[in-house]
Length: 482
Image 1 (cartoon, rainbow, N blue to C red):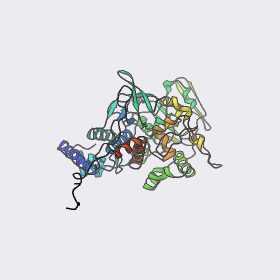
Image 2: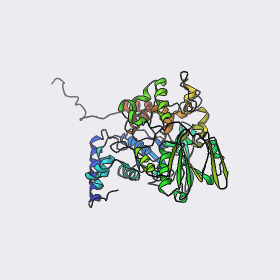
Image 3: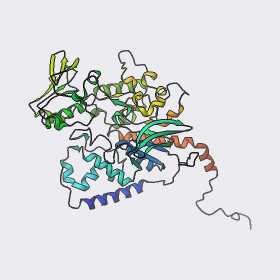
Image 4: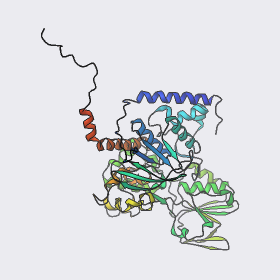
């Protein structure tokens, strides 16, 4: 990282001032318009509860605030500054996205990452940046949160969502104990694992835990010094973990790819244009299925930076066409059986991605049987079937869950899914930065539409009762004959 400029603090203050001016220029009309709802005890009911204060949750909160939706709360289980994966299990050196991308700024120039970075380090330093340093991204998000004064509570973990009359009740756990938050809308901005869980193959689950870890876990890489490490998986996350093990002194790292060839096609390079990012979710089911099942099956390949990290080590090997058949433990080591024979390792890291299945999410237990999946709503043409991807939720145009049986659970139309599970319905969305500029506004428009429509009769009455004038009341004497 470059050294901050001597006047970085003042430059950042001026940037924040300019961001405020730009927001004011765009802030018309300023009128609060969402009608207040109250519980039986008089307590205000949240218009929207956003679960997750990472990049998506903060941006959604900003979008709602900019459209003058008040009484919004964003919650996150992790401490402030540690939301998302960037300071925990993300082990890349840089983000996998171009440095020029925008998203959390929602079109306000002075809120872009580039403006924030240049204010502290200068334009010359920005020119030296190839991709955004991983540890700078959460710092930037923290700045966005502070400058916009977003309504976030940390240390609040969602446990379960239940129906509560015409509203939703979110049972949450805090340091002070259990609490219930009532909301008209709940948005699940819960990232990569928010639509299910991290996937672990069964043969690993049967192995004593001292011999393996999933890439999503906190791993003591220093303890792997001098150890022979096997990494299962060949996508981006698996490669990042292989690099981390090598850099911490592993004696050898073998990375296993079940496919005969390493997947190197980067789907985002093709998909990152307005037509696809903004509109693929509006296409018919067949085209969505074709495009997005192919997108998901490609997975995210490792980057050139990740390859450069591992390829400089002579004790690194990529072993292709080696699906694991059996694991066993003997003499303090793990034996790995493949079609090519037996190999050994001291420790295994599973970079095996996520499993999307809403039935695995405890917060959705009350509605699990009522949420429609793609398997429920769409039958692919012969040869295009994929049972695993068919478990993804089939979402409405407003990112909301859809009833499997119409009329059985209408309240789920007020639970909006903006995590990795939304990919099959809308394209890369809830766990990616690139599409944020296109899809967060789409979600916010859906939320404001629903909030307005739910109170349409009261808005009609308010319009009917309106007595505002641009000038004083018209004089009755004007125009009368004298």
